[in-house]
Amino acid sequence: MCVTPQKEEVMYNRSINYFGFLFMLLLALTPFAGARAQLQQSDRLEIPTNSSSSEQFEVFSLGERGILSVIRGNEFSNRNEQWEFVKYDTTLKALWRTSYKLDFRYIPVMAYKGEESGYWLFAEPDTDKFLFLQLNFQDGSIDTYKGNLLSGVDVQHFKVIGSKALVSGYYRSRPIVIVHSFFDHTTRVLPGLFEKNTELNNVDINEIDGYINVITYAYRKKNCVFEIKTYNYDGKLLKRTSLSDPRYSFISGQIVPLNADDSYLIGNYSVGCTQYSQGLYVTHISDDTPEQPQFIEFSELQNFFNYMKPKRRARVLEKIGKRKSLGKENRFRYRLLVHQLIQTEKEIVLVAEVYYPNQRSTSPIISGGISRPYVARALEGYRYTHAIVCGFDLSGKLMWDNTITIKDLTSFDLQEMVQVTPVDDYFVLAYPQEGEIHTEVISRNKVVVETEKFKINPKSEKEKVLNNEDGYLSPWYGQYFLAYGMQRIGTSSIVQGREVFYVNKLTYKTDEIGKMQAKEEASRPGHQP
Image (cartoon, rainbow, N blue to C red):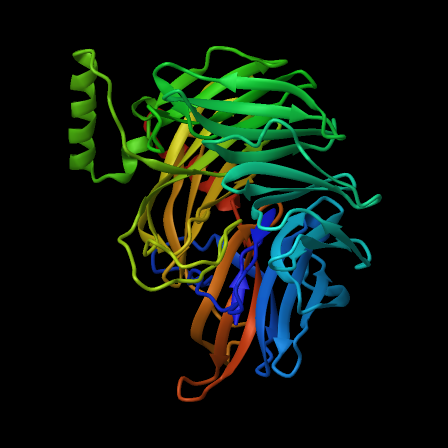
């Protein structure tokens, strides 16, 4: 049994064994003593597992339209794999269900969630044959398309724009982006990408204007060049935007379009051609010409070092101050996992987690995550220390920053652990750890609710959780969260109990936060009503 987190792109198991260990996740209605019960469960769905087959469970958020659950598995007596799709509304009531029997010659590679449909990419190993499955979210109808792409492509991204699939990755160690049309079954390779010493950073699509942006990171003559190649819907190269700086290298970048010709690029940078982040940057791009980037060193953020204990933080800040006073440059060795930008009507919010690779392991580990192959790991996993949240106004100016401390959280795969959701005028930060959900609430650069911990309880008060194998937490819509995974529940620990896939609908109430702030304000000396 295995549970896979939902993301816009999900890489599937390429081996026969679909079993894996994700992150232990338990959600709760009852907080620890002394904490305010803000996270509340409103609905719960339980799906019994099938003991006669191997299964994998996934959940895709459809916002206010509900959720899509996918259970795939094969009966031990049948070589073909059965896929069952079920759509639920926001009360977790089933709206429709449909199934598809996958030919055993194909293996799942990736999935992509579009606005109106979901897409799944399958490949026949050691051939150039691929299969695309399209699922309509409205009625559950399924269409399939076959295509011949390239044999031996190491797929890293899969997205769909209009009626065309974008499959990108590496072919013979060089980057490649393949465009396949579902209608006329034609396949073409985007020009200008098949170069040495070049890495794919991201494939960004602008469905409104029909643009495809391929972001690459290249090593050229001892310099690192961050480049954006923009193509139209037909795959014609329209423009090439290069960012290069004599002192700094651009590690990642996300495009914030303003109009057809103007955009912002926001990401993190390093000193020299390394993956160690020195800070964040913002630059305005007009047509294909970038302006001088604004570099924001970590030491310029007000709360970046708040994850440290007070004495250590004071020593670090003192050392940074001394180096600056002597005109010396600070060097940081932080690795950042940058999330997809959150865009609201007033601001752009960047979330990034700071992590370190753990020690090496001789045993292969299989686990869940985003856009990753299930292969043996050279590392034992990753350890997270803290996450930063930064707000930019619509002109690209940094307005505020905050930090959430992550204590002793490890993961077999590098994936987003901290979920950030705007609720009213606050941001709710939450992450799973060792059977608990840790939440914290911030109002821009202020922490308004300190860390709280919540445990999970079964739907029935007569039952209790006997075992938790897989689990995940993700934002849903508004103030609602989705928690899903696999549990063994029963009335007593001396019985085996029953194994279920579960989905919990959780909401974070912020009403009391405002009342408490008003009360604290009123109690301050000199307060005038």
